[in-house]
Image (cartoon, rainbow, N blue to C red; front, top):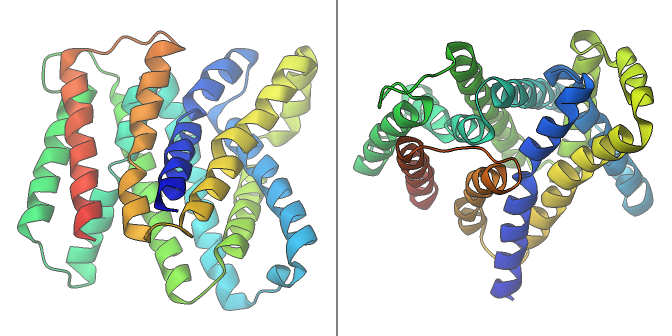
Length: 289
């Protein structure tokens, strides 16, 4: 059965890695990064809502303390996706995805600083590898041209993703059902989008080319969010969470390969070296956990 779990994790990583493709195809139609975040969140929320409505309506029940946690993860989810999508547009898909994957380092720094975790040799090596990798990917090391705003926004997506992971970890420690947690996370992300994404302009954009844009919007929510989530959750029935977390680094690799094969992005040897260093750093932290 472990083989089945590995297959599900690999597929989840591949589907998560498709975000860049949807961003690249939706942006020319006039979708802003916040609007793409809204599209992804609303489609994911509707799918999760229908799933719970059919499978277990008791998951709709919650309380004030849980709602505060869900609000935190929802806002973090919103800023992660928005910064991630904007970084893709300002730099490249491969650069944006590895910058977002600096999140484990920020979680590690938080844990060492505030939670009293020890800074082991493995964590120190991962930190050095992550810093060097970011230098190579961004172009700071190697003398390549780089977009300062794009790199900054990319790091912000990593920080937001780290905050999301911290809220998720707290929710799991409190025994909150992950399906319910994701439902309300998507809900609060949608609510945040209503104030920050000008979602009421989206129908105007879709009308310009309804057949293509509508399919891309639905696909973005299902293919890059809901489908990989359920594949990953199913995989946890067959393999340990630590193993699944380690294998999740397939996402940045798949996103990079898809950007090269489908979008025709050019990657220098310096950037390849940086991507490898960051993936190694994430893998080291996952293994230690």
